[in-house]
Image 1 (spheres, one colour):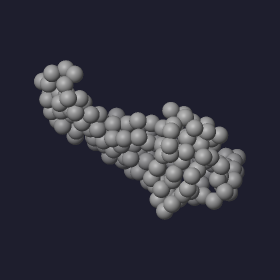
Image 2 (cartoon, rainbow, N blue to C red; image 1 turned 45 degrees about the vertical axis):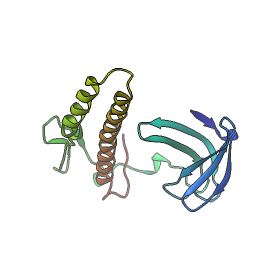
Image 3 (cartoon, rainbow, N blue to C red; image 1 turned 90 degrees about the horizontal axis):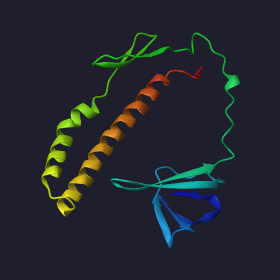
Image 4 (spheres, rainbow, N blue to C red; image 1 turned 180 degrees about the horizontal axis):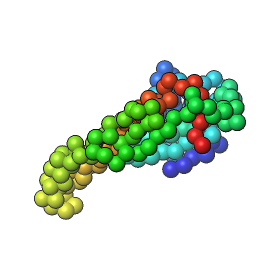
Length: 171
């Protein structure tokens, strides 16, 4: 559910919690913050998403203290250029021009047995039964666990690639 900024009012901000009042919903939402909100922000919109382990709120803010990025300020040189190639090999999935190879993440292959076991148990249960619904939720949590592992692996590799460079660009 996408909610625009005019329909959201901030009730209060405590230590790690944000209390919002939304015109489309009755009452207020208690949201756990994973990082502090900047001073002088403007609330643009919010996206509520239901996943297998609960509800997630994505809040878009406008912070005027963040400088505007201009890609023309970075000039490509040999020092800030890094070539990358996707390797279709069992152990590696990314090779760079510096000669380093990043190992592939086998999160799906490692979790296939667990997923197959849950799916087998679910298929044995009677359709529309409570036990089958519970196993369906468990199966969704397993898939979400794999998706989070893949996303985290990509973020870690991106931070590794850009860790020793002051400037970077993508042509």
